[in-house]
Every structure is written in C-alpha cells, then in structure tokens.
Length: 53
Image 1 (cartoon, rainbow, N blue to C red):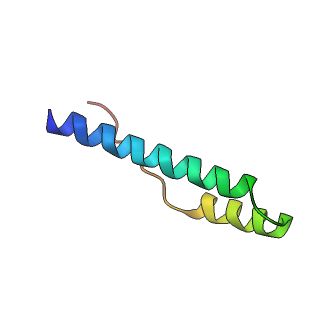
Image 2 (image 1 turned 180 degrees about the vertical axis):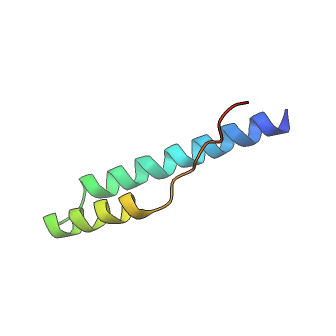
C-alpha cells in the first residue's frame, strides 16, 4: 500500500511542477524569457516510469 501512495504523491508532485512551469511560460514578461523557460523545461530530467512487469 505504501508503494501505491508514494506513486500517487510523486505523480501529483510532477503534475504540480508541470503546471507551475506552464504558468511561468504563459506569464513570461518577454518572448526571450519565454524561450529561456521553454529551453530549461525541455532539458530538465523527467520522471521515467519503469515498465510494468
């Protein structure tokens, strides 16, 4: 049961981060800042799900 709860928490945290990044991109003051944020978001490591066995 702990594993399921941990996965749910991790998924929620990942979604929260993704929404925050999208909000920052949408509210960027300049086009240059927007492009910079997009570049950072694309290079940051993503949570990789292990294949189900």
